Structure formats: structure tokens, C-alpha cells
Image (cartoon, rainbow, N blue to C red; front, side, top):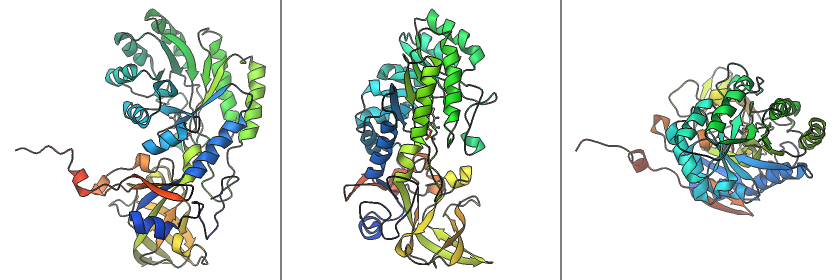
Length: 414
Ligand SMILES: Cc1ncc(COP(=O)(O)O)c(C=O)c1O
């Protein structure tokens, strides 16, 4: 994996500072295991930051993509703020050492109880509905908030990742903004930010400009607004040779739009999640079983959709590399299946790989975003450890679950 350009893997070094993924990772921490490269996170964060020289813009990392506290703090230390979606994420960001003023909360279907934590913790608040403003009034909150607007447009790589449009569950419609504003004013709450996030896996920068235009139009009715957040969702090259999001083109288009729309006095905000972490991470697993089925092999591994749900949930593609045979010729067509009792537990379909055998180690590439953060204990499989590699050193940043963790919340009758 290179820091610049699209993904290209050197078969002798998958891009982890020369750390040997079998001897120094799998043999030490076991399998399966998630690993992340600090230098790739650093490269992605600075690529995004440096694109916007001259623009008044804040970059928030959307921590739903990867909420490991060590990684959240590492990204905060790169100069990014943190975007969160639940009290749990806010709690983890605060505990990791991010100050409240650098944390932004935006949930959906948020309860009054959720908001009571958020208000107490003093982080920045965006609301997704008028009901949330009502809860804030009831909680006696008087300060600034942002409104998540549904600009009636959406975009994304799968229908499940589109978060705008008339029937979307997210945000406040432009036609509801006046009502939101009156309610907020009646409780001494000032609307200082408009926000929108219309989907994930967006390759075309013009989508963000369309969003900006909708928000810009609304500012005419809302003099208290001075921040415009146009969301995250910037596309990552999951497949070899796929283009990455064109940051410098986006920055020039944005600069031009700010001038054209007269938004020079507004602060802009973007909130990439996957773009910062996806390419930094991979999931290593061992081959446990090989079956011959027709013209292809069904290769079983010691992980599954419980650890990496994206293929089952979104039919997402993760490149697979057989780590101990990475320089060998591809010879067989395989499906790689997990160890979960579901037919949808297929991590990769119809891949051409070197002759693969029990005991080999496979890497699911670009798994740093929405990998561990979406993982579960389904089938009561244990969660894997997470290992961070930076400057040639590997360190454990979350231990493997143990069987007693599976029982830790259980209450049994005496
Ligand atoms: C409000 C909001 N902002 C940012 C993001 C980050 O999206 P991505 O990880 O695709 O950049 C999401 C993802 O769902 C989101 O809901």
C-alpha cells in the first residue's frame, strides 16, 4: 500500500514499515487480528489538510469509521477534530484525551437521555430533528447548535450508504427550517451551523458543491449561521487501480464556489471517516479449511462477517492477498468464507489467488474503516485484537476478547 496514488501492493512488503506480518504480527498476537499503519493514517490526514490551503475549513474525523481510542487520539494529534454519533463515541473520544470543544455530536433518533449526556459533556451539538431541539429546550440548554439539513439529494456506492433524499430518515427538510429556528429561538438556542451529509463513497466533488448551494441558500434566512458543514463520504480506492477522491480539484472547486456564493465569512467543515483510515488497516486471518466445489475452491478462514461485515452488508469489495504467498502466481479461483453460521458470510467471491492451503495467512485489505467498529460477537465468536504499526514498531492497542468477556454482563438468578 503506498501513501500516495492508488493502491499498489509490493508483494514483499504490504506497506507496514517493513514489519513482517506473519512473524511479527500473527505469530505474536494470534489470528485473526486487525492491524493499522500509523504512517498511512498520517499521509491521508495530511493529504486532506494540505489540499485546502487558504480556505477557512475545519476537518473532523468521523470516528464511526474506526473508534479505537488510540486511533482517535492519533488522528486528533494530526490536527483533526472528531465527529461522533452517539454518547458512547463522545465518551471514548473524551476518555482518549480529545477536548470537548474539538468534538461534534450528531446522532439520529436521538433520545432526551442521549442529549442529557451530550449537554453535560459540553461538546458541540448538531441536531437531526426538531424533536431534538425540543429535548434540548426541556433540558434547559441554551447555547449554539447546528442543524443537519436533508438537502433532498443523496449519493453513495450502495443504496444503504445514501443518506439524503425525500424518504431518507436523516435530517431536517429545508421546508422545516423556519419551524426549527422559531423553536430554538424561543429557548435561547442559536443556530450557528448548518450541516449535511448525503452519503458515503462519493467520487464526484460536484455532489458537495450541490450540498453547499442548498446550505448557502438557507443562510439567507438564518443570520446567526456562520459555519457550513458539508459532510463526509469521500471515496476510497477499494479496488486496485480505482481512482481516489480528487482532493485538489475539490479544493479549487470549493474555493471558486465560496467566492461565487459570497461565503467568505463562513467557516466550512468536512468530516471524512473512511478516507482517513480505510487504507491504513487490514484484517489478517488463517485458512482453516479448503473444499473443492465445482470449478472453484471454498476457502474457510478463522474470521467472518462478525469481524468484517461490509461484504455481507453492502456487497463491498476487499482485495485479498495470501500474505505468505504474495509473490506467487495466481492459479485458483476461490470464494473466501467465514466461520459464521450464515450463507451471507462470504468475505470475497471469485478471486484468482495463488494455490491456497490450510495454514496460509490471508489479508483483507483496506479494512481500516467500518471493520472493527461494526464488528460483533455474533455466534459468540471472540473479537480480534487490534495492533498499530508505526515507525517500524508494532503495538497492541486492543487485546483479543476472552471467553470470560462473553459472560461479563450476564445476570443469572442466584
Ligand atoms: C454524519 C456523517 N458524517 C460523516 C460520515 C463519514 O462517512 P465516511 O466514513 O464515508 O467518510 C458519516 C458516515 O456515515 C456520517 O453519517
